[in-house]
Figure (cartoon, rainbow, N blue to C red):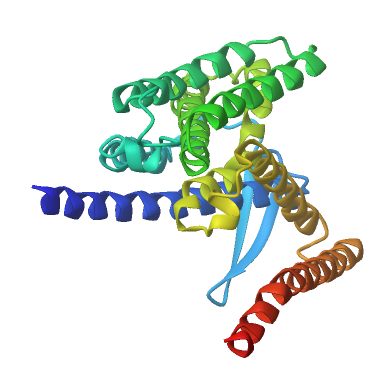
Length: 320
């Protein structure tokens, strides 16, 4: 039975990884279109993007005021996120809920938090985070500061909660799963019905609600955390410097900050016509130099610490 479950887990993991790669690429491609679009003078389209692929030239247009005939044959692209959401929950259950003592708990010998309690706390986060996120996203559009403060406090509170109760690896996996679940529920529970409502409006000769689009554009900023979700869910493959350094809260905060920064870098490159801006190049060189200096400093410290032990080892035979 264990071998059968392991085999099924491998299949689900493969499906989940394929869906994640496809969906993340799709999201980044759409964002690239939005950034690189240029204005055109056309009665139906206001923006267009030219691109190349496989020795072919492609033109993509954004239709400003679509007609019913423009939407004939349109296929809504939500199957990838459904596969990603379903396989993710199944994979989480097969791995982390099957052996919570190994993957979630801080100390398996500590009886203060049982396996059932660890699973219950995890489920509370997977269910509670999307619900609270939905409440936050109903804040009026003009309350910008309140919205961002609520989002930050929401994420930081969950991170602090699990960092104190789970192992560092367990906390990283849990936060990654919660963020992924929140983004998936946000898309399937909000974007999908809104898109269908917009299609119905166009079919009736009407135009979609522009206010609803503004609310979604604000929600869509969740996508800046996608690199962090991928990193956190792959943290089981990281070394101890990442998943067991004893600073779970700080590590997750850094991962989230780097995720947002990486998305900003990608968008800066797109806005610069696919060329890395000069200041980013210098920043990359400075970061690489700082990393080399930090590694050299650590090597020197480790060498100094090992010197007494080496000296004792060489003098011991003489004493004998």
